[in-house]
Every structure is written in C-alpha cells, then in structure tokens.
Amino acid sequence: MIYAVVNQKGGVGKTTSAINIAACLAEAGNRVLLVDADPQANATSGVLKGERPAAGTPGTADVLLDGFSVRNAVMPTAVPGMDLVPSSADLAGAAVELVDREGRDVLLKAALAPVAHAYPYVFIDCPPSLDLVTVNALMAADRLIVPVQCEYYALEGLSRLMETIAEVRARLNPHLRVTGILMTMHDPRTRISGEVIAEVRRHFPGEVFDTVIPRNVRVTESPSFGEPVIRYDPHCAAADAYFEVAKEVARRG
Ligand SMILES: Nc1ncnc2c1ncn2[C@@H]1O[C@H](COP(=O)(O)OP(=O)(O)OP(=O)(O)O)[C@@H](O)[C@H]1O
Ligand SMILES: [Mg+2]
Image (cartoon, rainbow, N blue to C red; front, side):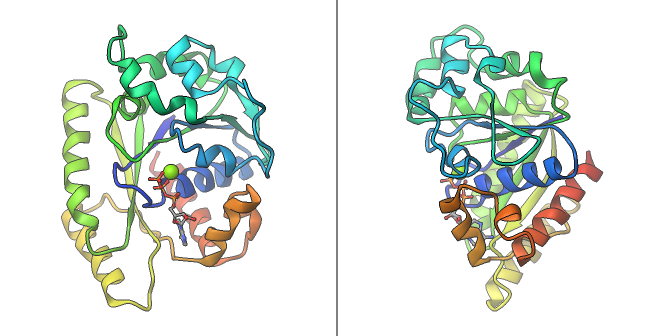
C-alpha cells in the first residue's frame, strides 16, 4: 500500500507524520519505504541520525528526472526495517522540468512499481504545494494521509485540497482513498485548538483520525538528532499518539 502524506499548506506536520507513522509501522515488524519527495529534504535528514547522504547519492530527483531505478536509490535509515529514498535540493527544479516529459504525472508511480511488493508500506512525504511532484505522489498513491494543524485557518486550505483530491480520483486515479485527516499540534490549553478539531470533524465526518497529535516539545527536538520522535523519546505524549495513529492506519487499510 502506497501512502502519500499531503497538504499544500506548509508546516502542518507532513514530514513529522510521515516519518513517525512509517517508523511505528517499521517497529511493528513491517518493511517500510519512506520516499522523500520534498526538495527541503526534511524527511531525509530526519531519519539518518545526523548522517548526510554523500554528494552524488541518487535520490528522488534522479528517479523522477533521470529514470534512475528506485532500487538503486534506496538506502537504510536509523530505524530498523525502514528504508529511504532520499531527497536533496536537486529536486527543486523537478516540477518545472517535468512539464515537457511524456507521462509526466505517472513517473513516480512507474518508478515505485518494481519495489512496491518488497514493502507492505510505502510513505511519500510531499512538498507544501500542489505542483507536478505532488501530482506524481497523488498518482502513485493508493491512500492519502492529510495532516492539518489545529489552528484557526485550518479549514480554508483543507476544503480546496479535498476538492483537488476528489478531482484526481474522478479523472486520474479512481482507487485513491483518504485514509484520514490527521489533526496535529493540538494544544489542549487553548480553546481554539479544540474548536478547530470539532469543526474539521463536522465538515469531514468519518474522515478524521480518532487520534489527535498533541503539540510536544520533544517533536521539535527530534529532527536535530535525526530521529523520529517515536525513537528519540518513545514515551512522550506525541510518540504515544503516533503509535495510536499507526494502528489506525493499519486498521483503516
Ligand atoms: N506535534 C508537534 N509538536 C510540536 N512541534 C511539532 C509537532 N509536529 C510538527 N512540529 C514542528 O512543526 C514544524 C513543521 O512540521 P513538519 O516539518 O512536520 O511540517 P511539514 O508540513 O512537513 O512542513 P513543510 O510544509 O515545510 O514540509 C517543525 O518544526 C516540527 O518540528
Ligand atoms: Mg515537510
């Protein structure tokens, strides 16, 4: 099953959710592949424990633009059972470069097909945009996870994103499903945070994960150690929540 973690809004918890849900499922004994599809490469640096991929290491840009085999771009991570297709700034021009390519929106889907059988779970961490790289992720994916930050403007971008997803499903990828909208960075001390969760649940009944990810300082610390928070501090509140979300992901299928 290929999951894309998607929201065109920046800083909502896509990368944090992708690496932690992926890591939870790896810790449960599944082979997991994390595909970093963002030139910011936060997922890459977030799982390599401070090791940087050597210059020239093949990654998502080589796969999308140069027909590199995913098999040759896969590298191990600090999380046992979890492999990574790394990203780098090389991916920054990809969306523009892809425009003239034949089959420009199904390149990632084609690239992942030969390795998908080796990984029961593949997670694609998308950039904060709806560019051609994200479209490639939406075409490659069977399922979507949509992180949404518990803040006042949450619903605005979300409605547009859900319309885009519905359009992709209707026209291009009919078996695409939303596994869930994941409410992130919940702060129980503020009233607005809870109100936003209730509002999103009202707008998208049945589509929101039961589990909500709390705002937690351990999450902000973990990237500088190059580890998912579920390994950096497995007993903090955010780690607990990500373990629960991973169970929901496995259950919702
Ligand atoms: N539950 C949380 N508690 C505290 N901080 C969090 C939490 N989730 C994410 N953050 C922090 O919020 C910031 C944005 O998170 P993240 O990078 O996962 O978002 P993103 O959607 O991938 O961003 P971008 O759109 O730039 O790719 C990061 O600094 C991250 O450490
Ligand atoms: Mg990100």
